[in-house]
Amino acid sequence: QVQLVESGGGLVQPGGSLRLSCAASGFTFTMYVMRWYRQAPGKERELVAAIPVAGGSTNYADSVKGRFTISRDNVKNTVYLQMNSLKPEDTAVYYCNADHLFSRRAYWGQGTQVTVSS
Image (cartoon, rainbow, N blue to C red; front, side, top):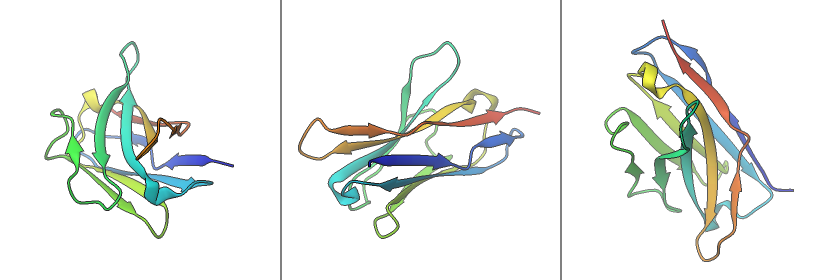
């Protein structure tokens, strides 16, 4: 059974930090590019960050560059999103996505809410 389980969301004040985790199971984690997306109320889902199988060259949305860091642990089958200097506009549901290297197969987590507010 394929599962992507996000955790680590919550309420944080502006300028604060959160670390999201996404634990994967039921598929070969090292065959998948991992991404974090987010969706704010009334807005389309947007790509936040991506990391290839072996780590290394990560990609970020312009709005989070310098503040967010994506990483993965291929032993623990987990991808992380370290979010620093959080802003109210970062408020959204954050989703973990696994995208197969050589096919259209993809999986999504259930999402975790991040709210940045004073």
